[in-house]
Length: 223
Image (cartoon, rainbow, N blue to C red):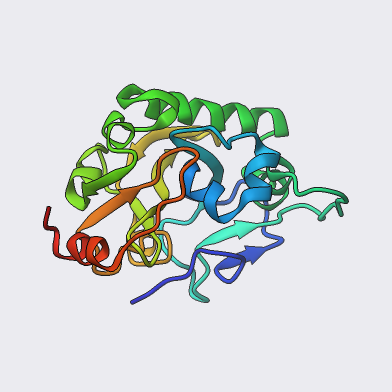
């Protein structure tokens, strides 16, 4: 069964804040994000980042509701913004308001998750990913870099776009320990790998052109 967890298709909008089961933490591979979203990349100041970059901390349900919803969203009245896109404001309004935490505490928890993940490499990025920037790494090697199952989102050319890790929720609404991601994450849009056996990791400042032969080798898992 396939689930949706992108946009607001799988969201319970206007839900009561604090009523959820766990957290998802989404990180973008900054070099790829900057190749595909140049303006947003520059507005976030990550154009030279060689690693994963925080996308957002999202409250989620363990299992989809009877209506197929997998997460709450916009749990407070939306505030209309103007000017350039502000990622932090967007994440707070869409996801942070559903945590039951204050705005400051929400972003404090987001920072704390990065610190938890930084045990295996800087800026919440496993060292093995940084070591292979500008080249390809076996899919299983990427998965094994994490203590628990995670969602890996690749584009159509086997290039890493995002990593989603999952965490338990403490009784006070703060982030607990890392856990295996549930089926609705592993079988949904947060875990799209197609038939790729290897993952290409763009290098900061360089947008890789994937040739047919390289793509084929990554799908076959060959060197």
